[in-house]
Length: 163
Length: 261
Image (cartoon, rainbow over all chains, first blue to last red):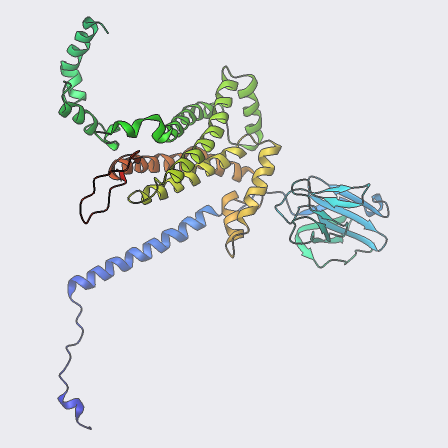
């Protein structure tokens, strides 16, 4: 039917009456304002400057650590381990719920006092609810010859630092 | 009571000052009594009339009322504790110790606050168990049960935020562990953790945030929802009372009413 269009009743163009138009404008701008308020609130609640301790720790001279020793820095929440292969730093913060773990010299393991997670000194979990091993932290030797640890940067395990 | 005192009270209640405050007027007619409830901002949340069984001990064990009582004690003692407590890292712990050892009645108020907090959590649970096992949450009271759930969450959050304020080892590690749980939320976990603490670790910002939540935001929420909770009791037909003996008389085509509102 080639001439169908000709006979079709013309549908009136969907007209936007004034009231609907202004209602939509009003609701639209309220929506924009609500989204802006949400964004504003989120931005306000997340601090831009934090007065937290620096993640970078100066652990002192490498010679001060005996070979095959585990030294805990309680304030920084890290372990500095001097193994036969070299140095490495391990986060002492339990991967379960953030408690500070402790090194048990007799058993030669790291234990968490909160929920009983246990780790080897390389961070591998032996026991307990911790979902991940203790992360290895980036270590390097500064120009002054000091051992430095960056707590905010994890590295893959078993990357020993040779001094 | 002697008639003398009664007469004095009656004269007081007829005085212009009294009537300017309590507009319902005086007299012990049912109308006056109903108006006294209805025209009072605080009392109008409640029904003007209740069945005797609804306010008997066995109906509720007064658990909701007792919870409200502990809440009042907590507000009162909490406001007083605020007069000596600074929510700052160098001062919080020392202020708490001052309250225990230096401030007159400080130890009493602090312990009252602490024990009432424990009691309130216990009473909220007891209240909810009582409501649950009596089936008082059913139609038409479902919405008030939901309000109750919100009030349970507010109570737990009040308990949790108050836990940090002494700023001792127990507080610090409890909040470290507790806030780390929020990190387990999928996708948004770390953001929630950051916003809650105002940083990456439990520190000055976290202490201040928990203080504001504990002393302002959560109590206001609690008061708001408590008001709705009480108002809904009236709207839902009063406290739930189960009829001890089921009605024997049944009308054809109607189910026997097992309970009254």
